[in-house]
Length: 197
Image (tube, rainbow, N blue to C red):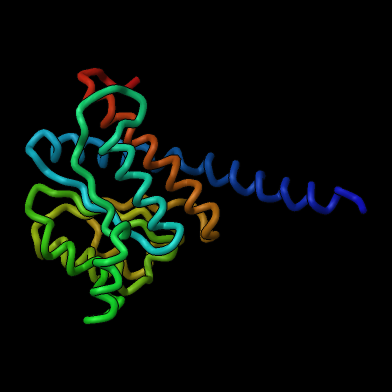
């Protein structure tokens, strides 16, 4: 059996990723703004709340753990909570209310002015993501959207938007990882008393 078709498919995936990554340069100023937003929020005692569905929940968890733990430097922990990480809360709300409210209810209960609420979504269409962003704005928190494509309905509820230049879910998630790492580099350096390179 020939390996040529597998190599061709893999090369197509790599070419798509490289082309999408090259288009990310225009998002770097927004990523810097989000890093500055988090630095300002942390400087004033704010908390970051993250969420998403499926693979986007994993991206949201990744973002939170890099801030609570550390990215590259030994520094103080920063407040970040992934709202998709507690199965008891998720299943309680989904069962007693609706899956559309699994993120908005915790946001209503936790988020305050000065906090940052970051949604991860490949399509921007998930009703629970839209509802949570709306709840965050009502609470006076600043909203950040990591999405792809055209951002879907979530776009209109975000103060800062990082739209990965792709409509393919795998590319969007890969690019979200790059973006959260760029942001974490700046925040990590600040928390360690350094300046980001």
